[in-house]
Length: 367
Image (tube, rainbow, N blue to C red; front, side, top):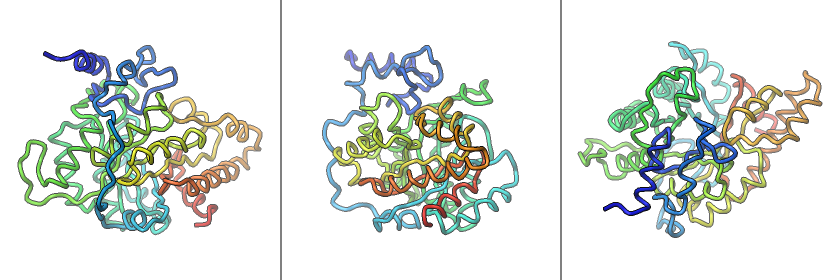
């Protein structure tokens, strides 16, 4: 007979639009309400003490860390500070223009992070885009969401990615279709991010599929996962990111950092939980160059705590000078992240299709 904790989890999962087993997701909004339905309090917060992913003790230090290949792994394993550039695939059957615009970043960033139909809107296949970047000579991190695929398709794509040369996968639950422009779409969400991480690790480390059937050749990717330092409830987020490390993540990439006072305790807590002995932490950095971008982030993106002081700075800066002011702000933030113990890199988010802003930021920050 199920106990009260199991019953509470089943009830929470039934109320969650993503039907997560390991909630809450990173989309909880201020007031602890669901990103999909602002009238729905996140059902997992009421049972936070009994959630299945909670850690009973710090992670055991590894006897040795798994060695990976590629420029991103080399940077991280060598103790350097990695730079990753976000890629949003276009609405096009031709990727040549996208590749052309990212070409100046090749050799200046350690990898490109290819979003998988971000904000639940369809774009060119992330798998195809990542493979094209690899063909161009840029290491790609393939984002994989649970929103659109069941475990059969997810395993198929994990294996196919490595066959196409992609050596990094980033496992996330994904945005709900209600947030995108195809709201009539039926979401899958058979798994959530922790389950996908564990499944990806089993393929790699145990050489078998989810059902135990052995593989002829196991994949050799690095596994990434998302961290949400700025999503409520803040007290749980470092532990949840650490639980993803326990499930098999080799690196954690976070939401965009604007609030260092909130971010640094998150990093310290991950360190205290032993997660940073097993995995690398890559901090998100949104390259904001216009007032409109800052206001959009503040209003529309869960966890984007854009400071009022930064918005005020952009408001009082004359229009032609706002780009320089935004880049200067981002360069200062990048320097702060480099100086934060436990942070091993930065993930640069271009806004409004402004791919070139990432190169300008790297140049301003000294290369």
